[in-house]
Each structure stands twice: as C-alpha cells, then as structure tokens.
Length: 117
Length: 110
Image (cartoon, rainbow over all chains, first blue to last red; front, side, top):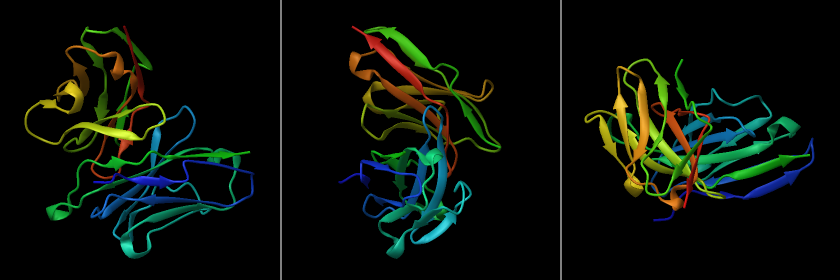
C-alpha cells in the first residue's frame, strides 16, 4: 500500500511569489490534514478535511493560505503571496474514517520543505 | 486547551541499554496519545497509540509506552536501544487535531 506522498519535496521561492504544495493521501482515507513545522518549533496543525469538506481550519495562519481538496482525493495548499515567516516544513497526513466518525492514527507524508528568501 | 510537553531536547543512551523518552500531557476529557518517529529526510512514522484499555501499549520496532493518568505522562520506552533507533521522536495528543510536543532527539551510541 502506497503511503502519503507530497510534492515537491523542497521549494525555494522569493518573498511575494506563490507556491502550491500537493498531497496525495493513502487511498481510501477520508481524513486529510495539513501541519507545518517552523524551524525549531513544534509541529502545528493547519487544517483538516473530511473528504472534500473543510472540517476544521482553525490553524490556518491567515488568508494568504488556501487549501483545497476537490473531489475528496488529493489536496493542495497554496501560499500567496509568500512571506519569510512561511518557511518551514509542511506535512500532510491522512487517516481512515471509522464508524461513528472516529479516526485514530494519522499517517504522515515526508513533508515539503519551503524556503522563502 | 490541550498541550503536550517533551521536557528533554536530547536523550543519549548507549546501545543495549534501556531508553526512556518523556512526555507529559494536559487534556480535557479522555486523552488520545501518540508517539511518532522521524528519521533524517523522512516523514513522521507512527509508532504507537493510547486510546483506552491497558496502560502499557506496545508498538513498532520494540517500542512501548506507559500511560500514567495520575502523573499525566506517556513515556516512550525500549528495553534495549539500537544505534538505528537514533532519530527525532514526537509525542502528540488529540482526537483529530493533533497537538505535538517539541520533539526529543535520541542519540544511541555504539
């Protein structure tokens, strides 16, 4: 079974440019999550999709970040325009949706390292 | 608010010795607790979880964790460390929106 994949693995952009990160979850996983780790700090939740719907986007830092999951399969996270403080590693994770809406362990992708210069 | 703390930035242990990586939590309601490991240039790999039931949870690669409600701890343990266990370990808590600790780097020396 293929794991969670993310593309690109590394992106270097200039301040003010736009970057789009992609995540392909494990097949059959309805839940998809985005997290990020800013250098030296803890991993922080950004948002959670259930299929194509945003369940919780309380962690999105501001309106420069836009996440989509059209069709309930892969997801994209766009940063526009990028700022220096957006640099970090962006992780995507997915999990199964169990009975009663429960879901347990999340499986993470390798991350996208974003560097804004 | 939910929080998870890993009080040690780094843990050093000799190969063959037992290891412990500490984690404490603060949650309202039933805690859902997880341990993940990150090897260099890799994503987070799930090790084990506590949802309910036995306080001693067994996971991948010979790791186990002990849930202690009175001490609000969920320490990761392994009876005999391997050099290949050297990695960054994260404790996390939460139902779907995971809250992570800051990570503990484990260094196992030959």
